[in-house]
Image (cartoon, rainbow, N blue to C red; front, side, top):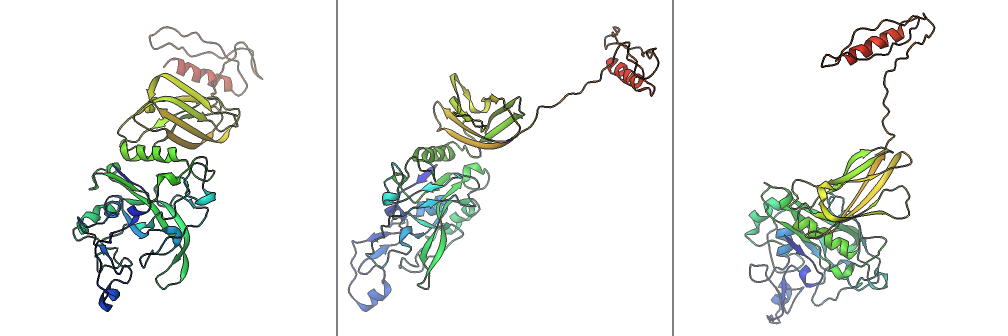
Length: 394
């Protein structure tokens, strides 16, 4: 498993080769307008290509190395913009449920508590869609692949997924400014799809963890993000959910469902659950003897029926980060059980003489004690008695 994180240098497609200085000729200035008097050092196996890891393992196609600038940082040297801005990244609609929450990468004074507020150069782009040959050394067009990557990319295309998105103003190919939505972060979960030709899990963020703080009302905190990443990449704990075992107002019971791909069944030492019915504090259960997540059972009695949002945090004692689970459960009334009944020596609108009972016996042949029902003018009780006798004789 692999996590590629960080802004700045890790977002560049190639090394900027300051060790080579081109001669000052009209031809060099024309051939290298973005970098003269220097060049970008290829994207060869040993000559650079820091972003090859993000592209060939995590399925990310780089477009902007400084998203908030809204343009490529060319010609060299062009400094990124450093605006104070509220930056909320919503989960991408194609993330397939992975990390289904927003991130707060706000900068400067807008940053959340504990965040560095310095994510001016987080990367944005798109999900890999196919092989792109390299044609020249201009950064504006040289986002192509190294020659042997054509066959490598094939299996990734179907598995590569985006994580978050950013919508902002970007300079388009014609030089104008348009609002565009870019992908921030991608992943390839090959181990979640055995047999699809990819044997690894990899994720690219394109931002630094220091840019995620604590307590933001619009995004998760740093610990949650890192823990979810560890569970997802390292232990294949993807798609874990609340398992509803019973859902009525007398007895609602839930557990945890683990997918077949999960590499561990973590031992839970503490569980905190909000049943969604307005309690001031979540219910907290601790286990002196930790229980496997798949065997966790929690029960609750509701005072009403209807939909309730259950939020569960299960904390493993080791080897895994906390599991954050949420589900809307439709709580119904408890089931009603109706049983037939016979009344002894009672008459309802008919003869005082009780109807005769058919002989009945238990499965072992012993006689079954019966109660004579009342009769009615339409024979209802007689038919009920006959039915009861048949049932008792089974």
